[in-house]
Image (cartoon, rainbow, N blue to C red):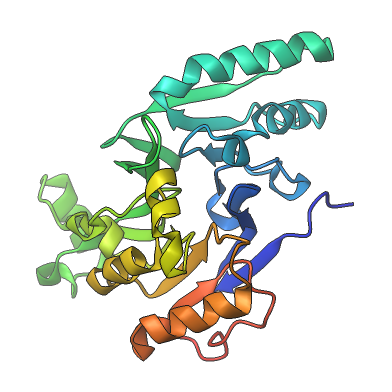
Length: 289
């Protein structure tokens, strides 16, 4: 039986599942891409996913590391791969080693330290690109990017044998194409992410907006989280098709969050926004974009 009652959204052919409440737990997975952004308390549904992209080490985002790895081992799966900021690797190894001793069995792990600018292969044509955020020491976000090759326009009418002949001659007949599919900001203060094109153009943006009321600006500043005023400024500069809002506070009821967002955003932008933990039916999935 699943250990969590997870939220689930479906965008085109991608499922986004997870749970994200500020200070409680955050885990957001995209099974078709074989990635899980942060791990929360490691709900059973994400155990088969091979790649965890960890943004920072706060307990509500990282508590399930050892359980995830242990369960994969118990079920006969390969060691899970965890991409994490380089400064977290030693304490993560210490935690895994401590749990191995408690459990009486070695817990296999593939820990990969990352820093802003790194790209890590997830699948043959799928890469996780790392960028800096402003939250805790070393915190990062991730964009999952598909890399393809596209035939140059001057060769579009050629037959297969003609293309093969050109390749034999060493002629470059195609050019690289990068398609940012989903970007996950993790916890962060406001940053002008529009400066990074792969974020600004990402089809799906998964972004925190923790605080919504005027008197909560100091809380947002103290915790290095996003307030609605900053969130609106950010969205105005981005060109994402879909925006999923995570890490909402329980200090403000969901119906009030919905109302504040609707009033703060232009209608065309609000129509792209989905509150991850909103139990109401999504407001615009009926018509594909």
